[in-house]
Length: 460
Ligand code: NAD
Image 1 (cartoon, rainbow, N blue to C red):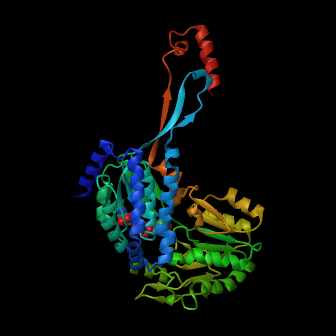
Image 2 (cartoon, helix red, strand yellow):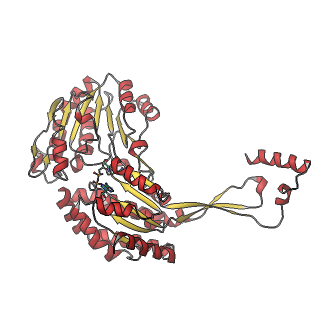
Image 3 (cartoon, protein in one colour):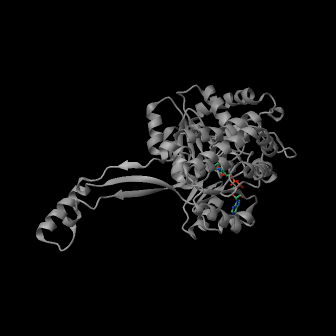
């Protein structure tokens, strides 16, 4: 079947109503959970082949992550789907008002290569829980994981309402020409714009989970060595190919000096003396990205790392300090294991630099000072802000995960996923008796005019 035929078949299934009952949604979520647990080893192998991802990390950040998302959804779904009563203004009594979540229809989920299990399936949890039919488009840059999805998903999920379509630009372009009821895209902003432009054609709502440069600020009120270890973990996980990884670090010269001393020890603690031999350290996804990243190493002073091996696409965990703001590494999102430290005079300059760039997906602040934390909270804008820890905010089911401005639009995880993949329908029900509406019908008299003006004041 070509993409158009697949979408047509799914739309037919959706229109028949099979995806709407709670029982179907729960059965699909349970089946997805079974797929992840029973076929865990196949996904681990695929992630190892695509990204040299360590199986423990594959469990924590990919397979187990989605299982957690499913469990959270299954636990609360019944309650989240209940109509939510809303107060009716006195002037409209008697009446009952509520908000009802209904599915959108046939939705498309397009995923990137860096967390190819999590970023494809976590949105699907929301799409199925909300009662939609869904097409999954894995990234062609993670071919082993893409093949595993194409092989396993039809064995577990209802093929009448769930389909995987593999492919690259050509196939995705064809998919984007179809009429969807929602498009959920994760990836870079350039393609995000292509997706948004295609969606306009059918007035399709989109969620864009994009990236950008996520800054870190460290001041002298914290234990700099402990901060360096956490930052190194968040940065070098998946060889820096994480959308919420710290991109660059801002600190005063004194703090930067202490950080420069701390990072070599932090890298050693995580990956040993030679990260090239560590089973816990990943590889760069492809040659194009490897070459792009190798070209960013020549900036400031190297504190640790710098080694690069094109044949295995190994790029050592690298920290550069005293990096000028006009260096290439400070241009685009790095999306690799290079951490530049830029020195600033203090808090005000750090906030100014952050605000001069695009709104980040995440901002991290290592400071014990309530005043400093408050300043970042109120004087900057970002998808998320993490005080004292990078990346893990996305593991808190109750928090919305998404960007703002150039880092994206819309959010998901937990109930936010359900909201993203549902329409919140306004429902108002008013009995025909007693007939209170007559008071506002024409013909208008002076008395009615007075009454309507009073009524409007009460509604406001
Ligand atoms: P990618 O190259 O795998 O592209 C993502 C998807 O877009 C793929 O499925 C691909 O087939 C499709 N695509 C590529 N070119 C296209 C085109 N011309 N037309 C239509 N579709 C096309 O992944 P990527 O974009 O390199 O991913 C990395 C980026 O994603 C980084 O910027 C990162 O920060 C961001 N990201 C964001 C999140 C998030 O949750 N906000 C998560 C991970 C990655």
